[in-house]
Each structure stands twice: as structure tokens, then as C-alpha cells.
Amino acid sequence: AQSVTQLGSHVSVSEGALVLLRCNYSSSVPPYLFWYVQYPNQGLQLLLKYTSAATLVKGINGFEAEFKKSETSFHLTKPSAHMSDAAEYFCAVGSSYKLIFGSGTRLLVRP
Amino acid sequence: DTAVSQTPKYLVTQMGNDKSIKCEQNLGHDTMYWYKQDSKKFLKIMFSYNNKELIINETVPNRFSPKSPDKAHLNLHINSLELGDSAVYFCASSHAPAGGKETQYFGPGTRLLVL
View 1 (cartoon, rainbow over the protein chains, first blue to last red):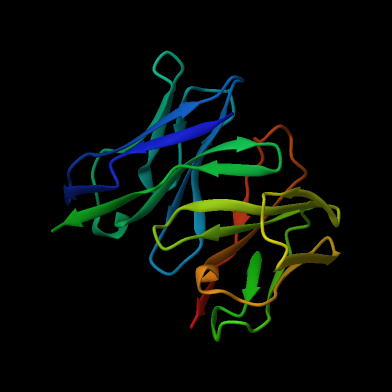
View 2: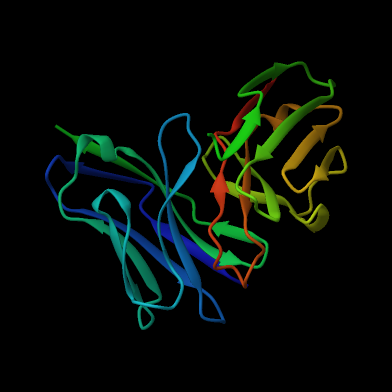
């Protein structure tokens, strides 16, 4: 069965600091991996996805993620946090007819 | 211009009532989904439909009955509402699944509170 684990339910960074949100997956087949962002009281918006092309995936709003098969990881990074990045971030693995989500990481950005 | 829309946005109701949530997508997608987000923000698939046919029913109680009148609409009817049904319900859509790599587009959510 496929699954994803997000380490850290809350991550707090200063504005301008590096953002690192961790995601590890478990899959017996090559996974399709996604990062979604949820702003307060809104729906989910796709940040980026990995579909077995380039291992370094660039997304919207300056985010990127690197697929590392040896570490079964797909961590999300952004070089410099902005106040507007404060939100809930979800890692997910795609399975036929559904997404399987991690438990989410709340990103707090301090002024 | 909203790609995936849901109505209502908020729903407050009494235990035991029956309610419906509507979802529409204008993206021309074949596949639609319902997800439930609980109070801890955990998201879980409830149903998947492809071309109006039910594909996945993820052990959801029979009180929940989805209906897809056409490919652009997927409604969710809930009978005999219980306190534990309080959650945010998200509709999503995508092109026909290709092993899980298709992007799902989410609606804004319906916040259901059962009193």
C-alpha cells in the first residue's frame, strides 16, 4: 500500500529564511508525488508534482522539491520565506482514482 | 471562471437532518472526487467517479450517497447527520486517471457543522 509521512506538524521560520518541509513516501511502484498548499479557509492548490521526469521539480511561488529514490523522500524547499507563505502544506502520493495525503505541515513565518 | 465550485460554502445543521452539497467543474474533466478533511486537517478520499460511474467508495457509511447527473457535476447527499460528520468536504476533478499522475483540482470546500 502507498503512503506518505510528513515529519513535523508545525514548522516555524523567520521571514527570509530557508523553508524545508519534509515528506517521505512508501510505494512498491514508482510513485507520483504532489505538494499542495491550503491557505486558511480555502481549498487546495497544487504547488508542484513529480511524475518520473526530472528529479528536481520547480513549482509556483518559488517552491521546489527533489525526488530522492534512495531516501524515499520528496522534501519541499524555498530559499527565502515570505509572510504570504504561511499556510498548511500537504504531500500526497497519487494512486489510481485517489490521492493519499500526509497529515500536513503548518508553516508559520515570523516577521 | 471558477474551475471547481461547491455550494454551499458553509452548512450548519442539527443532528438527524438530511443535507446536500453540490459540486460543479467547468474544466472538461472526466473524473470527480469527494474528500473529507477532519478537525486535525487530515484529508481522506471518500468517493471517486469516472464518466458518472462510481469507481471508489472508501468505506464510507451508507448515509452518504453521491450522485453524478453528468460529468460536470458530483453531488453529495448525507442522511441522518451525526456529530462526527462535522468536517470540511472538498470536491475535486481531474482528467481520467493515468496511474495516479493526473493533477486533481480542488474546490473551495464546504464547512459542515452538525449541532
